[in-house]
Length: 87
View 1 (cartoon, one colour):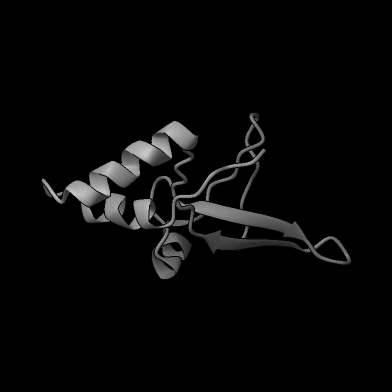
View 2 (cartoon, one colour):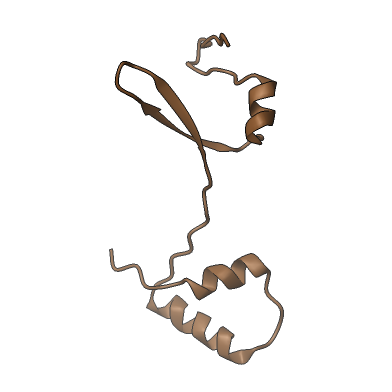
């Protein structure tokens, strides 16, 4: 399938390919160049990262212990993986 690079350096993936791979606006692709110059695109998932300092972790622990309110499932999952960033 032939595609063309536009003046901004972008290329458009045909709708049939996007549909087959389940790609939508905002989807992320990893680009690699294989030996011989073959260009490969691989769909990837990007997950949010929350970084907290010691004060933020302390407040988070207090919130966990309070047991009040209902947080969105994605936030509960992110909070369960929170740790101090030492960098």
